[in-house]
Length: 137
Length: 142
Image 1 (cartoon, one colour):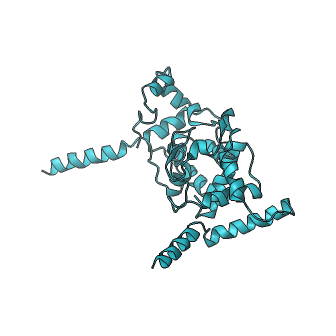
Image 2 (cartoon, chains in turn purple, yellow):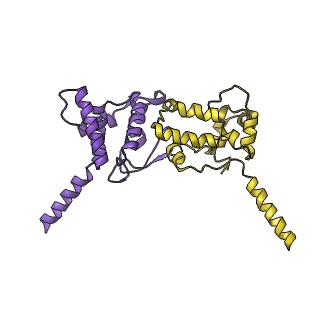
Image 3 (cartoon, helix red, strand yellow):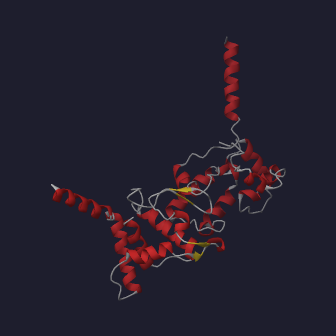
């Protein structure tokens, strides 16, 4: 019985950290681009993604910010946009299943938010890394 | 009795006519624009201003608010159809339109002459901020 429960738990944990088919398609696109950028590229890395997400940089309006400035340090909770004061729903897909589910939304916000924090668009490698980090949250 | 009914209907129709700006009635506009800021009614600016804004979303008052072409087109057509000069049956949209100078491209709501005139008495917006009041809440537009 315990074994079965453990199996279920593992299955759930695996499932929780998986992209849906459309998002997997986008990840595959990014991977192709990443290989073009770096012939030695193997796979995206959640740890590198976490670093991108948490590192502060002089961004929008010359303010020193990271992604966490608006999304919070606990991604399972709501957070406040430091520029507009608007509430942002949790970014963690386990707390908010709509996150990382719609490729169009994901592309839109990755582009905008990289520019907010890093004043440039992210590379395919950076975008994939961040998505690998976020899907596990 | 019939007279009373007439008065009642007359009051009702007056109220309906009294809407000052057409409320936002487009779900895509609400989703793509009003998740980040107040959903300003299209009737607050003329078509030329909305065209300018939708063409320059990558630098939207200092923020990248770019969206894909298909969504952009769809929102723009809603904005144009309801822009101030196309909503002249609404009191404020008519006044806004009449306040515009020929050949001027107004790049934000705050540049529109009618809005400037109407906000002259508000000398210091910071006072409102200090009192925890949002300028938009003071309007009760929709």
